Every structure is written in structure tokens, then in C-alpha cells.
Length: 219
View: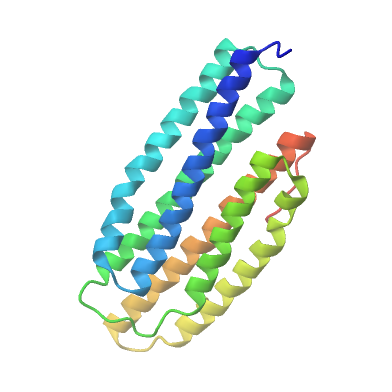
């Protein structure tokens, strides 16, 4: 018989909110890069507007975590679960901020054409989104091995980041407007590299939650 039905119900609600937040952030990253590739200003505006929803999720999760700690007298292992959820929500909010950053760059490009079709940046986004999905699964399934596997994917994103940096910097010349766009595309690549780093943070949190030991996945 469940001795703490209220605790487990509240914990289930917390995890549901976190999963929904994660799914929303996944869609936001995808839409931000898609809006850039298509120079779709309307889609970029939608990304920016959706950021308020992500902030609402963070507030809700923060309140749920504090309520669990204050009212349910969680044990040490429970505290790791709650603390990890709060940390994941914070990383998700920062990932959403990067999606907004990318969308703002799309809007800055209004009326322009891309100096070249995007190739490496969408690859970075695809891996980063996959990493985010895997990191959230590792949390819900308490899967340490899935969490640890994020390190290899993060290495792939880092290599693509180096590739796109070399490519875009090599294209710079004396044309101010061309250089301005290339610089903003470098920012986009940097934002996606940071998205991957935040997902490894989630993986590290999962490993600590399950094992009580800290492991650095972003080396």
C-alpha cells in the first residue's frame, strides 16, 4: 500500500509538466531553425511569442518543487528527483531562450537572401533536438546509460560547430552586409552548440539523480 499517495501524485504531476515543457522546447528549436532556413519572419515571431509559455512552465514547475519540499517531507532520494526536475526546467528555459535568439536573427534578415543555403546549421539542430529528446527520456525512464550516451552526440555537435565556424569565417571579405549576415549565422551555430551543452547538463542531472554520483558529460 502506498504510504505517501499525495507525494507520488504530486511527483507524477511534476514529471508530466516537465515532459510537456520539454516537448514544447523541442518544437521551438525546430521551428526557429526552420524559420531561419526559409527566412520566414511570421514563424520566427511565433517562436518569440511562445517563449511566454515556456516561462509559465518554469514557474509552475518551480512552485510544484517547492510545494513538494515544503509539504511532503521528501527523503534524500526524493530530493534528488525534485532538485533534478527543477534543474532540467531551468536548462529547458535557457534552450528556449536560444530558440528565441535564433528567431530574432531571422527577423533581422528580413528582406535579405541568405548568402548561402544552410547546410551544417540544420544538421547541428537535428542532433541537438535528438539529444534533448533523449535527455528527457533518460529522466522519465531513469536511464543512466541513455543519459551518458549524450556525450558522444555532444562531440558531434562540437565538430559541426568547428566546421561551420571555419566555413563562415572563410567566406568573410570586405562586404559589410555580407559579413554582418555571416556573423549572425556564427551566432546561430553558437546558440545550437549551447543547446547541446544544456542537454548534457540534463543528462548529468539524471545520472546524479539515479546514482547519487556526479559525472561530467561535457568534456
